[in-house]
Each structure stands twice: as structure tokens, then as C-alpha cells.
Length: 337
Ligand SMILES: Cc1ncc(COP(=O)(O)O)c(C=O)c1O
Image 1 (spheres, protein in one colour):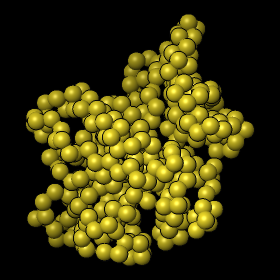
Image 2 (image 1 turned 180 degrees about the horizontal axis):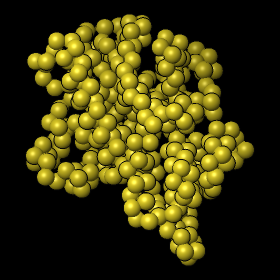
Image 3 (image 1 turned 90 degrees about the vertical axis):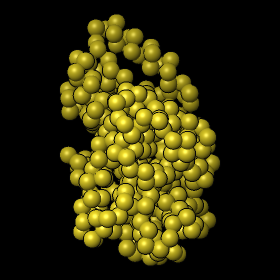
Image 4 (image 1 turned 180 degrees about the vertical axis):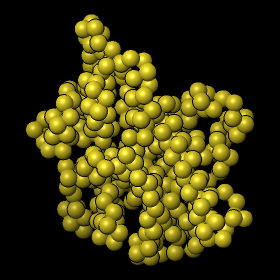
């Protein structure tokens, strides 16, 4: 079950942005396992797996991957077997005895397999071959669920945002305001399905609000190419007849800020730890350190750096992930603040 609701970041924007830009958080959460972003994608992907008669889900992610936890949950719910291949992106981060996801995988009956950095593909190929040899029907969900079909989950989210924007414009007497109620949308950008889906969904509806992706792993050029490739694949497959894409995706449509990654994926930064503490203390909103914490660090910088004026509004997509906060417990004071 998914609840979507709006929270006005009153204290937060007053205290943390000097120029009066409003920030709203679009919180996409669920009752159990709280991980969200990926849930919207898995919805589509698991249905495709079921339609193809699959009986095993195979996927991959980082050691505390929200996506892997949600895939295990979806598999359990559908009575399917599940294998999660956990890539050790940071040396020493794989520990089968650690808390967090290991407990969830055991609880949900998923099998976990360790992979070194960059080593997922051969392990996955062998596993799929072995499962087929046993007469099973595996369905492979790509890391993060980020392919064209997964992105559709966030195209649907874009449609919800458009609906809610309309309602807010009417409530504020702003029916004449062109475009969305917001002047920009900020989201974190990792495997890319969230960014891809929001951007594709908005542009398909002829809405040109900037979608700013805060990279959590790659440099801006690499991540920009990933997102552009995913958007183009999504358009080719599902929006080929959409007039809004008659000229393809504009050259500057994919915006990536890569200044908030720090030393690497999942490694703490001061800005991230401060953003998590401020959201928790000022708004009672829990962020995670790998995705939304870094996304919020980027959001607060965008809202304060003069790019947006007083009375403009920024929408922050909160993609969940709270369970991993309890695995990576970094406070600002741990980083010397
Ligand atoms: C909590 C959370 N937020 C954001 C993301 C990043 O989204 P995407 O992979 O679509 O870029 C993920 C990806 O796993 C996630 O788990």
C-alpha cells in the first residue's frame, strides 16, 4: 500500500535557506520496509515477471540495497523464490552478519550471494543458467529496477504530481500560472529510474519544469549519459507516438549535480549528515544516508545558492530508504562538526 502526501517544510526552509525559497517534500512511502522509490518500479516489473510465468526473481544491488529488500518482499508476497546478488561497492562493506538487510532477507526467505565490485554480471549469468537447468523460470530485475519498464512507475508518479499541482494551484488561486505549482523538482539520481521516470512523465505531459538530479554515485557526465540513455529508451518503447517527443529530448534537459557524492557511493559527507539531522530535528522527516540524505544536501544548496528567488517553490522527492539509516549511523559530530 502506498500513501502519498505533502509536508510543508516551514521551519526547514526558514532556517536553512537564506532567500525564502519554499521546499515541499513529496513523500512516497509504504507501511512495511519503507523503501518506496523502488517499490513503484517493482510493481511493474513483478507484474511482467508474473505475466511471463516466472517463479524466481533474481536481482542485484549494494549491500544495504533498498531495492533488493523490496524485491525480496515482493517475491515473498507473490510466492516466488528470490536471489539477491549483493555487490561490495565499498571494500569491507559486505558482512553477512551485519544488521539491516541481512535480517530482512532471512525474514523474507531470500537467498543472498556476495559479488565483488563489478562482478555481478557473471554471477548472475551462472545463477540464471543454473536455475533454468533446474527447470525454474527466473526473471531478472536489473539493479535498482531501473530500466524502461521500471521507469514507468515514476512516470505514474509524475502524473500524480501533475494532478496534485493542479489542486494546489486551484487552492492558491493560481490557475493561470503556467506549468506546475513548483518551479523545480529535486530528486536523488542513482541507478536512474526515479530521475528518468519523473523527467519522462513530465515532458510527455508537455511540462518543462526542471528536474534536478543529485548524483549519489557517478560524476555528472557519466550520470547524465545514463539518464539520457534511459529516458530515450523509455520514449522509444512507450512514448513513440507522443507528440511531446517529436523532436526527441532537448539537449539540456538532463540536469545532474555531482557535488554531493563525497568520496563515493554510501560514504558519509558532512552535508549529508547535517541534512539528515536538520530534516529529523526540524521536520521529523527521516532521510537515509546513501540516497535522500545526499539528495537533501543538494536540495538545500540549490534552494540557497541564488538559483531560485523568494516565493519560488522547489519540490523534493523523498524516495524513502529509512531502514538503512540504522545500518550506517553517522551523525554530524562523527564528522567533526
Ligand atoms: C531510498 C532510495 N532513494 C533513491 C534511490 C535512487 O533512485 P534511482 O536508483 O532511481 O536513481 C534509491 C535506489 O535504490 C533508493 O533506494
